[in-house]
Amino acid sequence: MTASKNSMLVTTKSITVVASLCYLTASFSTANAQYLVQANVRQCKHGLHYQPNSGPFAVFLFCDDALGSNIGVINVSKASNPGNKLKMPTDRQWKWWIDNRFWQDSTWSQDTSNFAWSPDLNFLFVASNNVYGNGGFYRLDLVTSETQRLLPSTDMATNSGSETSYQTEIVGIDLRKAELLVKVSFQNMATRGTKIERITINMNR
Image 1 (cartoon, rainbow, N blue to C red):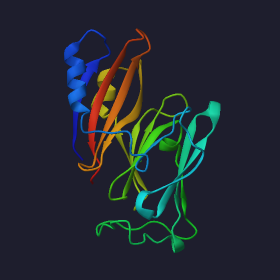
Image 2 (cartoon, rainbow, N blue to C red):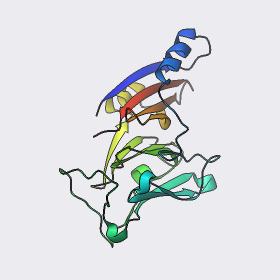
Image 3 (cartoon, helix red, strand yellow):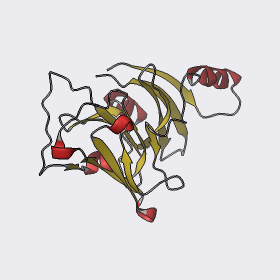
């Protein structure tokens, strides 16, 4: 997993920051609704959101109004098999069966900002808000049903201070490079100041 970052303080005065941001986001898009699904209140579409290319998984997006947007992962394939669309890795064990088709964990399923499928359909990336969720950004291994928090990193969270809250959002996807652009917003509760970092995440394992 590789990550590179471009940090900035929120400001309307810095031309350098604006130019840098435009350069950074040039290859990313939010238009690919098959791979990147918006879950915020204004764009939330309640129901099943299937993997592209007839993959074996779907996300059920619950638009719970004042309780935020919440998700769960479902294996929708016959006999719970991976099928022939998912590029099945040889070093990981398939953890799904006919009596184990639904996966939901409060660590990543609550107050979802948006989520994205990896091009190889092996992973789901989930960004969250910090009202009902914890604001983190997660990678879900759909083969093994394992979860890893990617953002904010331990160093980022420590450096932001104990009085700082955070939330994450996927702001772009580049399928050719298999990369996501993720915005991490830090808010200092004491000063009400906001700092934003934009991190590039490689979707390959």
